[in-house]
Structure formats: C-alpha cells, structure tokens
Length: 328
Image (cartoon, rainbow, N blue to C red; front, side, top):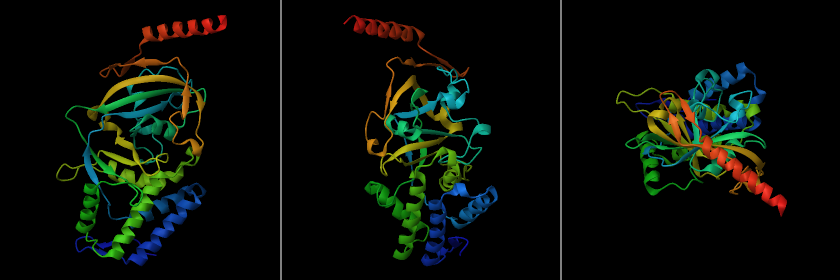
C-alpha cells in the first residue's frame, strides 16, 4: 500500500484516488477492530503510518467568541479522597501535562481543556456516576478575545452554513483538489476523521482515541507559523448530538488568557439516564437539591471561594422542608 497522500506538495501531485481509498480502508478496519488489541510497539507503528499517510491538513477554521461554555470536573478523578469541595481554580481546568493521558483531542502528556456548548452535552461526554461529587464550571470568552478554532465536522451530516461550505471548497481548490474523483476521496477522509472524533470510547480502552488524538495534537500543539498564526481550539461533533458540533477543546495553557470563569457549582449525582434512547433528554442526571456555589475566585493565588453562607442557608431550608413533610 501507499505511504502518503501527497507526493509533491508544491506541484499538487497526489497518489491516485484508488490507492488513497485502499489505505484509508486499512485504517478504518483497524479502528473498527479496536486498537486496544495492539501492543505498544504495534500502536507506535500504526501511529507512524497514519501520520505519514495523512500528510495534508484538511482545515476549516474561523475566529469564534463562545458566550457560554460548560465543563464538568469529576472530583474523585482528581483526588483519591473524593473531596466535596475543590479548592483550586486549576482543578477546574485541564490536568498538568505529567498527568495528562491520551484523550479525544490530545496525545499523552498534552493538556487540553474539554468543554461543551451546553450542560447536557457536557454531562453525556463525562457521564458521572450516582453518588459522585461533580463540579460544574461555566466559562465565557473574555471581552476583546477570540479563539482561532478549527472545525471538525461530518461532511454529509453536519449542517454547514453556506459560507462554511464555500470556505471548504476554496480550501480544497487551494490544495489542488479540483477533479471530482479526488474531491470524493477527500470527503471520505473528512468523514473518517469526524467519525473518529464522534465514536464512543470506553475510557478503560483509551487506545481507541488514537486517530482523533493524532489529528487534535497536530493542530493544537503546533507552534505559531511565520505569520504568527496558530490554531487555539478545536470544535467537534458530540456522540450525543448526532453530528451537531457542540464540543470544544482548547489548549489548556490559553484558558485563563482567553476565558473568564463565571461560576462553579458542586452537585451530588442522584440518578443517571445514560441509555442511548435517553440521549436527547434534558434530565440525563438528577442531582441533590443541596448545591454549593461560587462566583468568587482569586486567580493570583489559584483559589476558589465557596459561598458558605448560602450553603448553610440552603441546608437549613432543606432540613426544615423535610421536617415539614414528616408532620404532614
């Protein structure tokens, strides 16, 4: 089989569509089989082969200004003692690089801030368990800031705007993709990439993130080019939203520069509804009535100040309500 798609970048010389399709099929079969069955040495070989093969970047980028982002932190995954209250702002962000495992958009040792455009999607992606303490943080873009975002989208299922469709076609033309047979195979490549970002992955078998993590790492970890351009975030379809682009991954080192932390709320998960037939429900989880909130943060000292007065008042109110019900 062939090694790479582009034989000569300057002259826009590609391998034949048939040869590209054959190698793409090879990677699809590996993905469908499950990458957890391969040894470390075999995975390194697959990774090397894939990077050589995909020696072209299919990009669709634009500046975005997200007004509301949700991130869920599962407290027990940060600390063995499973604390109710997280004390550090950094606990609400991506992990330190020494603790960063492979993920949907990052290789091991790369820290990424994963979030969603709505609370339900954030819940579906993280799927906390009954009895867990979770901390829901809400963020927004800082005034005057923007994110240079690369869009991962399904070429047939995602409802692209007319401007985005034109931008995609212009990008293909710029790369020398003019013939219809080549356009068809590049659509197939885009579909494969989107489906890798969308596919459900058991966290115990996280090797199955391999292909999406390689794509994500390629864009997010790349240094600024000669013109100072750099991709700062990647948006991609949710496994929950059927190709609707509702997930966002931001380079963790840029989060405090680009985003404002609006609030943090501690919740206790009381019930979950994660069956596939429930994926459009708004009540994917039910949480206990007693919640602890904060809108006060000390960024200089990396400190969250929880609203203890409101927490106490809520506790007294809930206790009184329970006592009143007993009397009835």
